[in-house]
Image 1 (cartoon, rainbow, N blue to C red):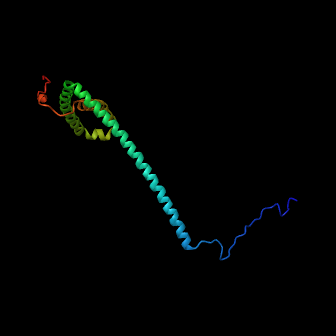
Image 2: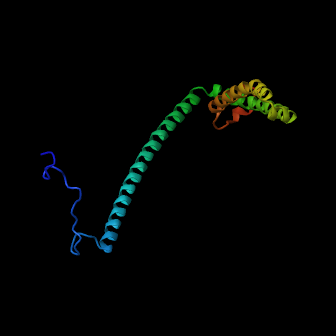
Image 3: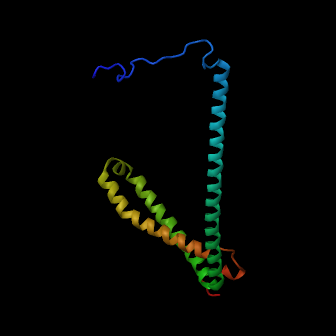
Length: 163
């Protein structure tokens, strides 16, 4: 019974190779490919539309946050006009100090080019010496500049803030 031919699946399948079978003509194959391409393009277009919608929402959200921040900063400047003026003057002074600091830093770089390029130790020493100070200076200058921006008034001509 183990070799019963009815229990063993056939090794070969039957194929209909007659001329009237479901074989596709070249024109049908081209039409099917065209339909598939159109479908894929429609899916791509839908995905692109969704991506554009998401980008528009993102821009709207970021724009709203920026407008809110600008509004709050403008309010602060109106409530603290003298402090805003002092921040602007301090930023101008600190900018001059930063320019001088960068001038000295660039001179040292130019004088020690070979040592900085060839030696990791010298480069690390240079970065340790100038990096933190430059980073903090830039941060403070950025805050002062942001708080002190705005149109200058005729009272701002006195750089000592004596008005």
